[in-house]
Every structure is written in C-alpha cells, then in structure tokens.
Length: 460
Image 1 (cartoon, rainbow, N blue to C red):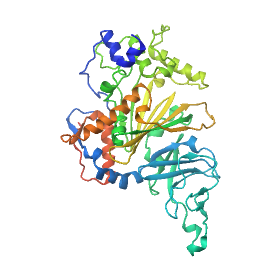
Image 2: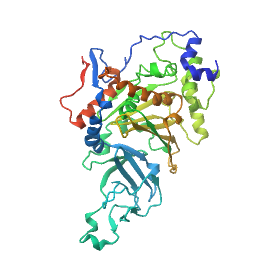
Image 3: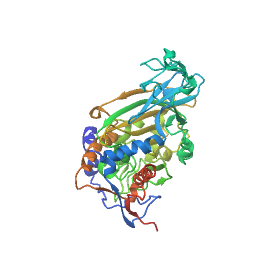
Image 4: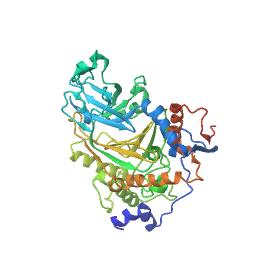
C-alpha cells in the first residue's frame, strides 16, 4: 500500500488489508483515574452554553477578565522594548519588556480617549505613545507627556498611569490576567509545573504562532483537545500506534491532564498488531518526528530492541542533527504524549522533542472563535531566543498536519449540529471528565448555582 493510499484512507485501510479485526466493544476509559465509574448516567450539559449570545456575554463579563490566559511566548518579549498585543474577544492586553528588564502588562488603552496604544508585536520601543493625540507613557506605564497640557487644567501625571494587568511566566510561556486580585499563576497552575518539571520546560523556543478563524464556539475547539474519546472515530489512523484506553487522566481544579503512549497498538485490537502495521501507522500520523515521511518497511530490530526503542531512536537522531541531545530520556518517555488542559481555553501538548500549545479564543459571535497554535522546538540549555513568526491563516488553507487538520475541520460541523432544535443537551461520559471539569469551572466563575449539569457518574 502506498503512502498516498494510506493518507487517503488512514491506518484503518492498512489494518483492513492485513485482515486485522477492530474490537468496537473494547472498554472505553478503563484506566481513567478521576471519574472512572460506569455507574450513574451521562452528564447532561445545556447546548445553550455553546450557542447563546447571552451565555457568551456572561462569559465576557464574569469569566474572561478573571482567568489566567496564555498571551504569547517569552521569545516574543525577551528584550527591552519588545511588545506583544494579546486579544481575547473585546479585551486587549499589551505585554511589554521594560528597559529595566521587567515584564509588564497593561490594558491596551489610552487614558485620554480610549484609543489602542499598540497593535501586533514588535521591538525597539522606548515609550508607549498613543497615535491619536500623542499622549505618551514610559515602559513602566507612567504618563510623561500630554500635548497642549494647559487645556486640561490640573492634570497630574501620577493620576493617569496605564491600567495594569497581571503578567507572569511558566517556562517559555507568558500568561496575563486582567484581574489584579487574581491568585498567583503558580497557584492557578496547581500540579502542572511540578508534573512536567522532569522534561526541562525552559529548554524550548517558540518558532511560529498560527491563528486560524474557526466557525465554532471556542468551547467546541477546546473540548476537542480535552478528550481522547474521539480518537476511535475521527482519528482511526492513530489507534494502530496509540494506546487510547490505558491513558490515565487527572483533574486538579483549573487544570487537568491526560497522557497517552505511542508506538504501541490500542487494546481495541482483539489480537494485537504486528510491528509493521504499528510502524506504518506511526509514519502516517507523525513520521516526521523521526525523519520518515513515506511509508516503508520497518528496519530489522536489534537483539533486545523493541519497536518503541526503534522509533524513539529515530526521534533522538533527528534532534541530535539539530544539536539537541535527548539521550537522557527513555523510549517510553520519548513516546508518551502529555496533554495538559488549562482552564479555560488552552491545551499544552508536550514530549521531549515537541511542545505545542493550542488556545481557543472567543470570536465576535458564539459561533466564531480563533484557534491559536504556538509551536516550540527543543533547544540546548541556554540557547538564545528566537523571533517567532506570527501569521493568520484562513481555515481552508491552514495545514497543521494530518491529525490536527481533522480536529479543525470537524469543529464547524459540531457547531452547526448544536443549533438543531431537538438538540438541547450534550451527553458526556466519565471518560470526558476534562470536558466536564471545564463546565464546572465555568459555573463557578459565572455564578451558576445550583449547577445546571445533571446526571453524571456515581462514585463507589
């Protein structure tokens, strides 16, 4: 079978060609550690949370101004004078590296008549000047120039600083929060930084930030990266080289996690799979990681070597050619994807050789959002900053690779389905515990009490 045929039909075509049977009835979520009970009933979520303008407005009023959000990478604002404008719905936050080296964030608004001060990203600023009437602030946010000052009467510079926002970093990621009274970022992230500390989170540099407008509610996109239940349907080409069942999940509060091993077949296959089939599935879905783009015969294994060792060795070799030494990681560590969900809208996907962050930001209507993907590369410790390339791409032209393209394309179909008059509630399983966690956090921030969620698992 050619690579073209596999690309069209997915790994399922390979499996059919080899006569392998798929066990459609294999237990789903058998290793879930958070909810994990088959007792009870589905958790029912009102569809209006995805379609209602009133609900979207409530989110804008009560939730978005109070949560920590990923704004950009440290590489965007690494040097004095660097700046980056972060937008979320109607809100705009300006992240600036001061001439004293400190990172600051301000509400992006001139205190005179409300004009935006900066747009986009750039470098070399020595001041923050409004382009409308030339009011000017220093990089610490202190007003220092007002043209024709006499007409304002008794105007004191100290009375009109730029409005601050909270800013902090985790690794090479910059977060902002419009609520000055919000909990520290370290508390908001809960166990996540400690959980991933072993991987060397600082040793990544941002290369690109791609924004794609999607005709779907932001939660539709975020939900798609908060569960692996859809892999057996939307990504059947993956299950020949991914264990989507023995993939434990954890929920901490604002954050949650799932981890999946790759280079092994899903337990959904009754009789297992041969190594060649697993090898071909891995090439189709992520062969670029090991420098193999076309389906080919699997190399012979050395004595004592497993298929995971072979794949991990190929990935390490590719990174070594780029000057990155990943020899300290085991084969299992190389091939386990850690997927962290950060409320409300971000997913962090990380292995030793890759780091991708996917954020879903609200659009002009409940049926629109922006999907933003920050792509990082691993680097040697102490590597200099990179200057990320930021681009907005129409949905039909975006190419995130075989798997992510499917995730993007399904979102508008989901959104249209949610508008059907008979569709009043989503019915979620315990395996979708991270999606349920998002909904419960939403209720906390929006003040929905008692909960509108009904049903759910019954704990033993």
